[in-house]
Length: 172
Length: 172
DNA sequence: ACAGTATCGTTTGGGTCCAAACGTTCGCCA
DNA sequence: TGGCGAACGTTTGGACCCAAACGATACTGT
Image 1 (tube, each protein chain N blue to C red):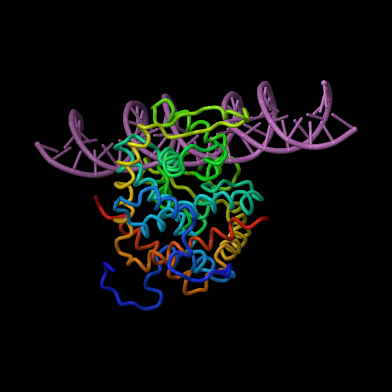
Image 2: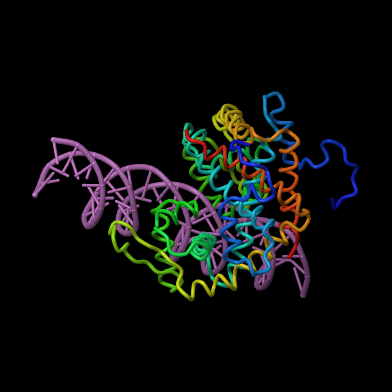
């Protein structure tokens, strides 16, 4: 904790949360859920911007392009629809991202030898070399961002987020 | 925990993490940091999409438009640069979002009466009524997404995310 | 006073993102 | 076997997103 304030109950409420309580104190609001979810959005937004401006800028990669290349690096050649699902983007968006990466020689496209509706996407040698250099740097930055959390806290953070993912992935 | 598996050390590793360990096991990687940060991205991405398709679609609002309207609803009339900062977007992006909301009669723009470089943005009565109806529904969905976490876990989640935000907001 | 500098919101150009429409290819079944 | 529905990737249209350039306004120092 950087500041020297006492550690009472509401002390780590950010000002925004106090203002919201003042504005809508009479509504039935789950402030714990609000703080948790809105902080997820805020961290993701800020961290994505940060990564794009630091480690990804050195390789001139957008965050999405990095994500797609990472998927291909870890899992090898895959059908386009699966790449889109694992990267968390629509198939239409994937078309553009793959085209960009293809122009730069980092990924390759080919039609499935049997089912010609399918497209197989893979990382080229150059793409793999890029990730072998880039991913450790990216992870070093992930470690720096979470430096104030001990390993147990990081596991709890990841686990709580997974429990939200489970709800999001429920059918219906 | 929904499944009945034993609770050994690696049990809540998702398959992706196992595959990454297999792929890059020889690198010096902080897997706890990787799981935590990448889950932040994944939850934010999925939850944003979910919110846009459910509670926000009923009011035909994009996630960003909702965020900007929320800021104005909570804090009242504000200078455009502050709205952009609090919504986590650039001032150029804010111009477009405010223009969209203005066309729909949810926010209003006016020049600062003294400093004519500044623009003051505020929620209209209609914008405030919209948020008074929408925000409780939005929060009910936030509560549903975090239903598997008890209040203490939600507080810990929010706190861990705030500690990442502190690092991100460090100068340099 | 007034020229130079700084700051504001807007505009522009290029990239990302989605849903929906489209053409191609496959599988099913009469 | 041949037509029909389903599934695939691509294209299109519109919203979002940023950096950089721009014009208007305010401040500063001489």
